[in-house]
Image (cartoon, rainbow, N blue to C red):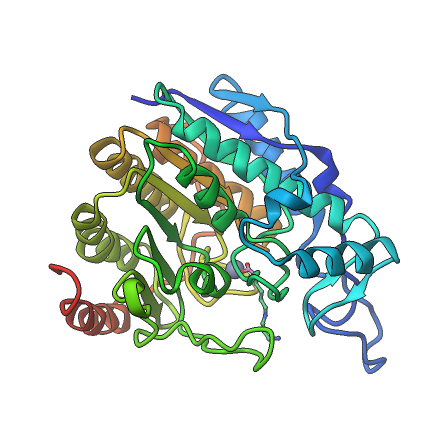
Length: 370
Ligand code: OKP
Ligand code: ZN
């Protein structure tokens, strides 16, 4: 039984700020009002505050050591890390169409990695009656070994998995990425390996940049060589909601994780599948996120001796993100705060989701008993 949430957090992560413009893109001068970039500090400030107001008794706040470049080299090239440092300390700007830095980004990104690896170390420590949670920005799941993408610089989840694998008790890690965007960076890192199972659940958005994001997130991206079958993509149609996510947890994720038998579960928890998120097209409510948290906890209890680590990824509707994230931890800790989703009003398209999930299960049945 887990009863506390260990939140790895440092204010250094608030100072990162991508350039303003038109939504996530560069300013063209066609519009009247410049908009702050969707990855705003308020995202994590709101999560921190709702945890303090609604789950204060359960939360333990943990200090973060910023990761050194050497540690980040477990996943990224030395040259890439140095490029990010130089770009950031010189004042920043846009690295890709949507991914930008300021002078604080390099430091913030090192804190994010440090929070993720600190949380992973807590998770592998045998007596973990706590859920370690890295409350971080910038996110990591789009970052590839030598390529920034999708608001991400260093891949926090991949680094958490690598750090865990250095522990003698940990031979296999499963990463479940429910951020509404494809975790292409994490996929890339482990594409030819079977010691890390990567499951990404996302909107079927495809590739969005030939250089920064060439991966499609389609079913056919299922790993190569030793990694064949160990990348599992679950691309979902728009409108998938609570019921679709519940079915995919029970009919795809749970059986595959059970068959794989991981020693640690890493969750790339971006709550941008949330209803009203401006960057996603799914309609998961707080109840759906409670369900996801409860399912993850059930799987960790049954498969990994409660070894689980939760890493913050996306989520851009600043109010809903906080409620959704509270829902995840209510589910994990089996607590009912009584808080209701204030933004729950859209119907889900379950028929489309069901058709997609059936096709995905058929495809995956060549690798797994689903
Ligand atoms: C980051 B995370 C093409 C559209 C791509 C990027 C979204 C990044 C989301 N320019 N938009 O939450 O997965
Ligand atoms: Zn996302």
